Length: 325
Image 1: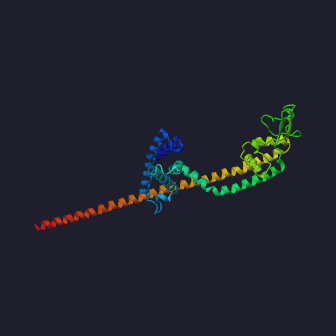
Image 2 (image 1 turned 60 degrees about the vertical axis):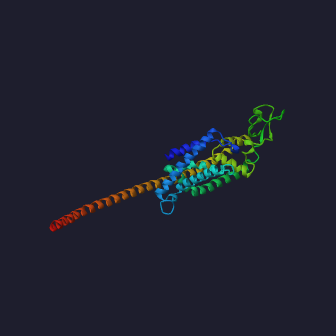
Image 3 (image 1 turned 90 degrees about the horizontal axis):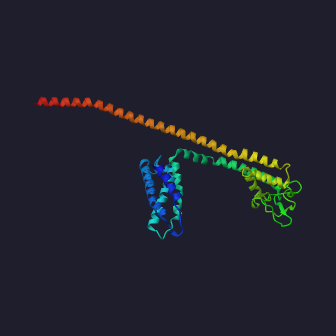
């Protein structure tokens, strides 16, 4: 029921349309009323869990679990925003508190163990990922410096019409000697400086910052071939491909895949831990059941032992009564 309520709450959050200056519509009014139902259900869940597990003082209590703490915080924020909006309807702006409603889908994590495994894996992988991030930055810096030395200022020539001075359609770099020859698209086209560069001047190696950004684009494999072809149009098809191919192999295929390896390893560890916790919980439940059964059998045995003694006392009392008669 709780998972169904969470899904319904997510749909309600998606349908809700915020309006400025306190304006609203019929759909929002209905959703505001349904919000009270969600709040009652979530609050009831928290109360029942607190009754079952205890609040916070002893081990295994409700707030000793991080996911339960997240649920409790979300419910408290929802209650506070609802109460304040009801009491101070005109004098208090609770939009900031209502923004915390977007955290409610996170309640799925506490109800779905597989999601807990995934999130725990990501959290545990933060330190190894930091080390890999340093390696990625190192690779980007090295290739950015090399690109700065080799390709600085090479991406600003393009083909212009010598008569009208207009740049070619879909401009790209050119070079009359070894690169793209403008005469191949028209006799009146000439290669000259003045173009801002590809992607509005962002993709180039003119300075260290843009060079790092261009290298980062390449190692993410997002249009790296376009960058290579632009460099070849500007400089020719000789050795430039070595720079880009080595960067893709080292940066994308090797270093970036280390991230997937770390996440995969941490996920396997967390899944094994979850399995062990489940087995341990089943063992504890089995032991508890056996202890309860043993106590019940001991109670039955003691009752069977005491019953003949009670019969003997009753017989002795009856004999005394008969004697006095």
